Length: 314
Image (tube, rainbow, N blue to C red; front, side, top):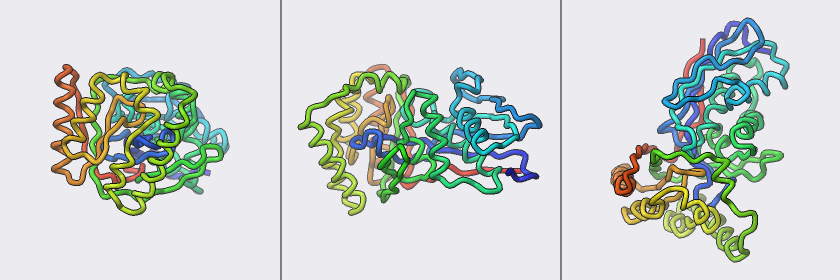
């Protein structure tokens, strides 16, 4: 059942940094320095349509292909909601950027739709529906973007089916996301990965993932730094971004605690103690891209970022 008097809801969903170097498909954190905004308006019929997309890129209005409309359609079918919605999307996250753009549109739409319900779904239940958006976007129901987007902070996906989420302590650090003006489709970035990897690399990665999580609970930034090397995924994807290692090393040499791909790239993230440090690190990373004549933009925000939320409703 829907709230009778509610006609329109607008929600914001933050960008996310998935994988966090050592947690491929299981770790992620929210980044509210940038995100997507979605407005749902009730219709007199039961159609789900994309009314408008405000984006510098061309995005199809086909509701069968957009993550926002896909998840709303699934939720309405399952809950037997007989009301349709017109969906307007303002994209703050570039497509193929590695910042969780497909997840943000889906999550913002779900949070807006949830506001219409007399008996709102839990975040856990919304996570189930958001996975259908990821499946539409890249062919797989991976949860490392949608979960931190919904819950905020740092999250661990213990299981995707059934979905089981562990909320982790969030370090009091500043995060830089730097996005070179390149595009990497998630399907392609996943396609370059090998199905089998050396056991010795798996052991080293397991040790780093475990000690990384321990460092979060201890608030131990030295251990966080020691645990931040990715032995499995980063070496296979580095060639997708020109100058990847030069940009990463510029961050580390400028005092970053760690740096790697955000999601599947091409965006990189870096963590810093202070906002002043973060700005210097970001500028030095940007300089490395410019050496290759690659333009970029960056954002800085606290890691203790907000989850998706309703902006307005009437």
